[in-house]
Image (tube, rainbow, N blue to C red; front, side):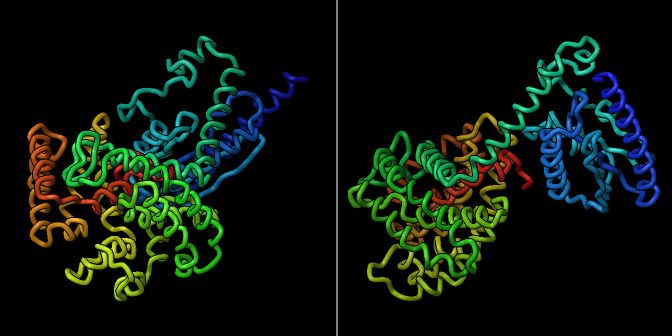
Length: 467
C-alpha cells in the first residue's frame, strides 16, 4: 500500500509540474517579464504538511518584501496549495539576472533561506542557475556539504532532514513571537541603553573609562537608572496595545502618567540626578507605537514605527513648549531662547535624524565593517553630534559651545571617525576638551540609543543598509 501511495504521489507531482510549465509559458507570452517561482524545501512523500504550508507562507512574505524593497514591481501573482505541495508564481517587472541575485541573497541571508526554493525564469523560459551568475551551489542543511553529493550517496535519512526542517521553522517562529512580547521589547530597550552608555570613548558623556563632563554621575548611576525605568517601557508597550483602537492623536494624553512615573523612579534610583529624562520620552514614544502596531496586528517595522510616532506627537510642540511649565526644563529654555525644538520637535517630525540618517548609516557601516560594531556606533554618534541642535550643550555652553561641538565632530568625521587611527586619536582629544569645557551631547546620545534599539528589532532586519 505504501509503495502504491508513493507512486500515486509521484504521478501527481509530475502532473503538477506539467501544469506549472504550461502556466509559466502562458505568463511569459502574456507579460514578457521574468518569473519567480517560490516553493519550500519539501522532501518525502507528504507534500502538503503543516510545516510545508507554513514554510511557503514565510517564503512568500520574504520574497514580496525583498522585491518591494528593491523597487521591483509584481505584475501578477498565482499559486496553489495542492496535495503535491504548495507553490507560487510571481511575474516581476525587471532584469532576470538582477532578480536572481536578489533571490540568492534572500536564500543566503534570511534565517530560513536555506529552506526556500526560489527559481527565476527569464523571458525566454530559461531558469537561471547559481553557476551561471558565478555563485556556488547550495549546501546541505545538515552537514554543509554538497547537496548533489549528499543525495547521490544517501548521506542522510528522510527523518533527519524533516527533523531539521521542523526545528528551524519552530525556532524562527518562536523568535518572531518573542518580539511580540512587551517583556522582550523592554529587554531590547535595556540592551540598547546599556550599549550606549558602555560605548567608549564618547566626547563629554559617561562611558567605561570616564564620567565625561559630569561630576554628579558615573557608570553605576546609569546602571541604576536603567534598571529603574525599564519596567515602565514594558508598561508603555502594553498601553499602546490597549489603546490601539482609539485615534492615534488621542493616545499620548491617556498614557502620560507612565512617563511621569518613570521619571520619578529614575530620580529615586539616582538620588535626584537626571540620567534618562529625554530617552524616557523618546524611547517611550517608540514603545507606545510598537504596542499599538502589535494590537492592530501590523508588523512593527521601524519605518512604520516612525509614522505612528509622528501621528501620536502631532501638535505636541504647541501644547507643551509654548506654555511655561511650573519647573522650566532645558528643552523649554532652549526653545524660548534659541528656538530649538529639542526632543519634542524630533518626535513630532517622526524622528527624521534617526530614520533618514543614523539608522541607515549604522546599517551601512555594519555591513562594511561587521567586526567593528563599537567603532561604527561611535562614528554614528559623531554624525549625530554634527546634526543635532543639542539642548544639553546649549544649556551648558550656549550657541558658541554648540558651534564648537559641531565643528570638532565634523573635523573628526573627516579623518574617518572612529574607524581610522587618526580619527580615534582625535576622538580622545575631543573627549578631553568636552570634559574641560563641561559640554555633554546628551541629546545625541539619546538618539543613538534609539538607533541601537531600532536596529535590534528582527523586523528591522539587522545589518541591512538599504531599508
